[in-house]
Length: 137
Length: 103
Image 1 (cartoon, rainbow over the protein chains, first blue to last red):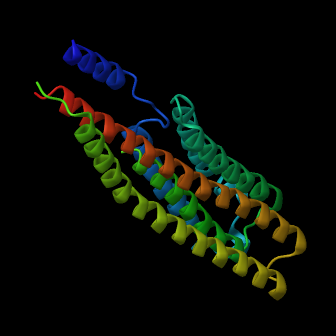
Image 2 (spheres, rainbow over the protein chains, first blue to last red):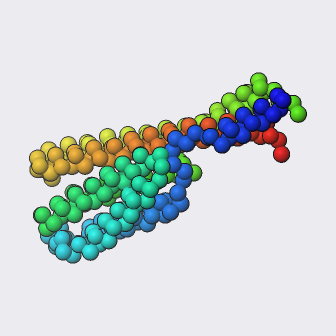
Image 3 (cartoon, each protein chain N blue to C red):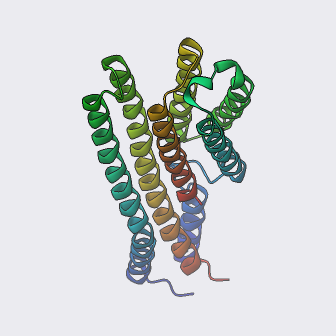
């Protein structure tokens, strides 16, 4: 009888394992790495142009292409249970990107100092998002 | 079949401790790195404002952006902490299952 109770209890405990965070998702990680490379290349390429030649129109297609990737990333994270931190991280990343699109469109130029800041900011954001995802593995 | 609850609890605690020890170092390392980057970013912005590289409006915009970046870094620490607890719980339960139901 005692053995039966222990086995039943163990099986129940095993079946009811508490889930407090979403499991690791390799697709999300791959998209994160790909987006990080695209964003980094985007700013690197822009930095090779003189400040007064950084017209918004020259970058509109790339801005939109990366925005789509970031929206896919947000959607993938929203589809996972117990994933509030990664969802908010994705929302922040998308907000930063859309802010850059809006400001670049408005000013039709991009300062050297702000470009340097963008290289650092997006590196920190992607590093934080990857660290969060990798911790789930 | 013999099952000693004291032995089981001891082994579950060991499993949790080992799991936490592995992850705690990573969290600490990330948090320290993030903190240093945040400090450097705010210092850079203050210098840029003083030197005229940024006007007041741009400075305010950059501070708002920086707050989003900092929040994203803090969320990573929270997620890493939750993942650490999750792994510790899983390690304890797996240990119990192995002890109660040896293959």
